[in-house]
Length: 95
Ligand code: SF4
Image (cartoon, rainbow, N blue to C red):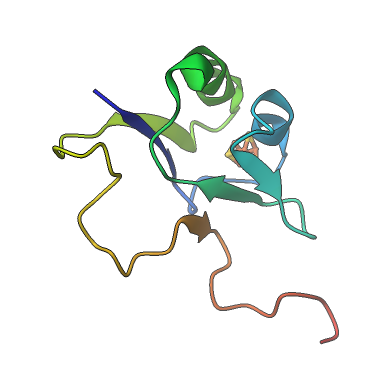
């Protein structure tokens, strides 16, 4: 069963440790907060994803099992693939 990464944006303090462990699926924005690719994780990256979850000092990251038939994170086609703690904020300071 496919697994997906989820971020609790309330808990995340933006230390960026997760992105260092799993750069294939997590990158940081200009403020150091993670941008999570929430599509199903390839099997060869699952162990690394678990390490990223375990490395988060504030338990803001989790791995969820995908129950859908097609291995998608959810059935909402309009949900963005990247989640972000500061959704709706400008993309750069001063812009
Ligand atoms: S999810 Fe955890 S490890 Fe990643 S940036 Fe937020 S606090 Fe840091």
